[in-house]
Image (cartoon, rainbow, N blue to C red; front, top):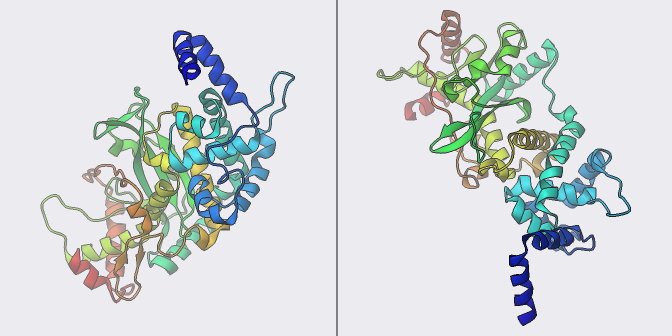
Length: 395
């Protein structure tokens, strides 16, 4: 014990020696990971823990490793062996899954913080590139119309090509690019979701010259794409009060002082039903990838890559894992007969969705208001659902 105390005192007196000792420990290749046998030697009794740490089963991990391996594998030198691609992927996935600090990752995987901060962005790039086919937006008019037909069939909202939403992601890197959200720095993540709960578009918006996050969509690259004809004529996204009312964006009726009429409440109920897809995806993203539900203490460039990797993994899981990923009870669901909504499991697993404020609708285009009114009349006539009056009365 005395020798250990003397050794600690020596390290305290000599910072350079302490750094050298840390590097030596981190570079040991025959290390014992803190998560052994959960990560390195997965066996049936540890599968639940494995999934908690990496958000996937061992066989899915092996499939992902095979995809990213050519992009992250490095050659060794005479002086040192590189960190194995398997460990780099494990650390990156665990960071995404838990949001724990690089220091915690260092203690658990015996890899230095400096090395982790270097390879995590590269592994995220490899994930995004390897899974690119799972997160591409529709390219043709027919693909958009197919999404609209599916929204009408599943959620009874004709003309809808997807649901759009934006949330604050807290960061710990104060600079002029960040917004302020309840005393914390943040960036804003915008996503568009289709009928399958897949993300078709995403964008991370920083402050730049925006006066407030509520105006951010007006200055986004996504809006430019929409204005340049991304959607077929007459089709739109559904959104909440944080977005403006436009020909290509339908949002709920809101009044500052006057109560809503019954037909307006019915429209809002129907729109919220269609928009539940994007709410569910945000909830799933934050519950599966807890890094997005914490304060990210990494560089802004790394935040972009972490979000991109999380979106790519979400789509990959959704399209390949099916009910194993979006299992029964995971999502908010509405009973088709009664209209009653059952909350998904994600609501009990995250700190809460960080919404933007309401967008002022004064000056909305007449054509957009007219389109919304036409949809309202359709929902109260030919497109009526049996439960909508009961649900509207409770809202």
